[in-house]
Image (cartoon, rainbow, N blue to C red; front, top):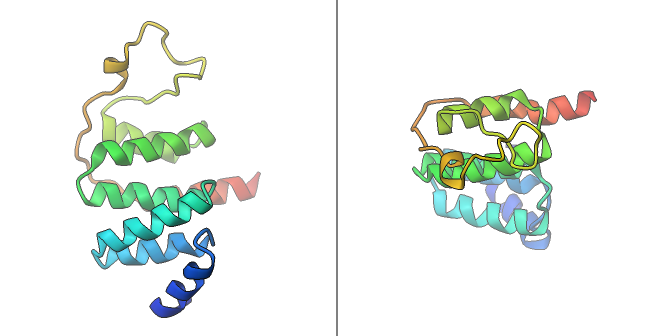
Length: 141
């Protein structure tokens, strides 16, 4: 962690949307300080909704707390922004047990009901660190 906890708090007090919120929230999550991690993530994403790393940390925090549907929701939001990202597709497949396709994509079946598209979330062990590739892939383009 580049900054200490007090420095993060001061920075985010002045600018809650600073991209550093994702790193601090992840630090809190790893320390199992989930409520604080949620607070930092929600404030950061409210001010900076395009921060993919923050959304990923929020998904991981939901997952760690057992809120699998919310983790899936956040990953689906990332998938909408990065529809061809293989890591996101892989994580969604692990969580839902099936391929998740955006309703707006040509791959989506028009006859698929909402209930069918919301498959049961399976608890699975996977590595959210895979999604650090989101930023790397975007930078390589």
